[in-house]
Length: 281
Image (cartoon, rainbow, N blue to C red; front, side):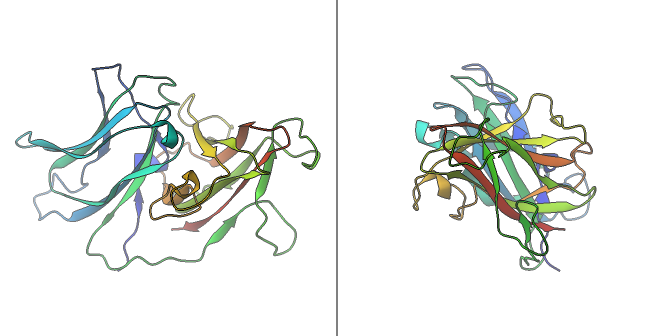
């Protein structure tokens, strides 16, 4: 039996509730589904990413045993200017078993605030269920003729400026979910031209409204590349800024599709390329 990645946060990216200085707010991350059963519990592997929205945001992952209240810290960090808008993996297969809870506490010294401040996403899986098996990758990109694939979406601030093609849209629906199916997704946001831009990802309903009112996720699309650069912020290193993350699955019944918009660029001639792949389970 192969291990299935199961999404956290209802199959979406979740905004982090951030408290005022000195008054942290608690964000629930994970509790084992079998923690209330009398049978021997299974061990779960927990993978978590966080993405700060401003410098000097303090974030901390804690683990608590329900019966005794014993608590300790699995990860803690303070954001710097260089990782604003860039995902950081903070739990990499962290083992959790029994009646325990994993939470994230946060304090902030800057805006923006919930639901468009810092964000988190991730997944869990049952250990001991065999090795991971990757099925066929399906392309995320523009609708093309015949069987052609490999051309990313191109977005531009309106109106697009030469040399960007006229009629280039500022946003596009890049993926549509199927109810009850989990889509393991990888997404790349890359500048068209030698200037950076901002990619805004929105989880939307059939009516093109955010599933969480007012929620969006802004990613920094930079031109720099290399092992220590933001384009390789995923763990393990990858050009996909969202890397093999399961979304969908019915945890958020209103979730219908993903939309990406180009928010701004450093130069009016710049655009944004959006591409990726998904594996449907």
